[in-house]
Length: 514
Image 1 (cartoon, rainbow, N blue to C red):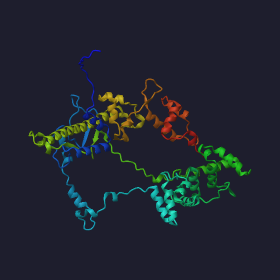
Image 2: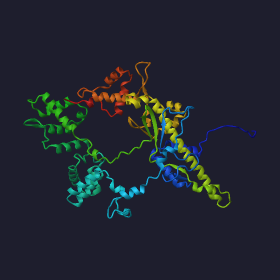
Image 3: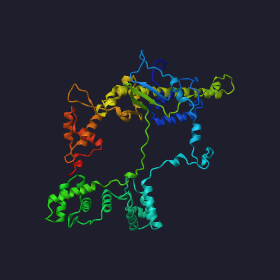
Image 4: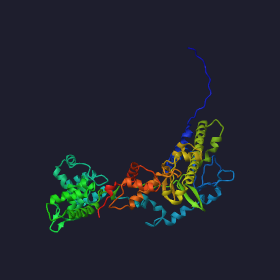
């Protein structure tokens, strides 16, 4: 074997730390970006947040500041094809001091004397914001008013602690009795007490018990075979249906329920047609019940979504505005410039440290600026492709994939995917995620026509179901036929998948009786 040196020249792509940082910032959501910027400001002394008191005309590297609300017009370019630069002078009013101290002095709560110096005695912001009442809190208040002794209260606390957000008890009374060291009969007695609490149907162990509790509170009726002297009481018959025919009820088999009830009654004077009518009345009563009694006390709070971009029509042209309200605006801190430029040997370690931080600060500022430009380019491209949607609504949404936008803006598909991650746009059609505009297409009947967006097809299915006859709901195959009449070729299983995604039950489950 011969050993020798071989010199080769090659190229390869290396992800430098700075490039990795730019990619990371690009895919962050608005809230995540705010947190990352705040962390960099704390860790890097050469990076500072630009406030209204700072002079906008300070010179610094890399165009660190950005206007408060930048605007880009779709197709709005100079004669040479490049986008025009904004005049920072038009934003000078946004950066001028506003005199907030005077405002606070005039509006501070009067309290005991009304002076700003008594700030410690004023309630905090968290104390003035109303917090939602949870289901557990609501039940604990009632338990405190209803429990007769401490033992009953302790058992009640354990039962309420095992009730989920839907209002169902998810532990058996045997487990609770063993943990509390009491008899099953005692736990069952406390459970019966809690099942009388508001909301009606809470602490049930299954759907059947939940509905029966609500019917018991709805009307005091006999729970026997459902027959009375005046016929069949709807509430009493509802109890009978839920107790003995719940599965048939879920499948809308009303005729089978009527036949079974007719046999159980054993009264020939009650005709099958009359029983079926009474069953329909009982079904209407059952439809008014709440299968999830804890729904109104849901602990989940919908997060507030702040749009990253605004799209609106201005003078007949769709324009894109970057929302930078509330976003930290950073620049290079020049208080450390003299230390970076110092050439003496004293403090050389500090100088090297500041030089490193300066490079990182420049990269952060440039990455933020590049992030904003990339988002605007992508949204401009989406507006160009989906202009009919912005004009007329979801029925005119076109099929679109990442590759189309990537080719239009001259970027890679992965970059477009990062840009659209957790980004939101506010337009005349509402607040939408950028990924909403990317969807597949459905082949048209006419070969020369354009494909139809899958989201538009879903909206058509929703409208068809909304306008259908509740006594004779549309089956999936009938929806397929209606879509074909509208010029769309779609399989029945695809309709079923779209219907399931829209949380629309099947035709048999949507059927209602007159």
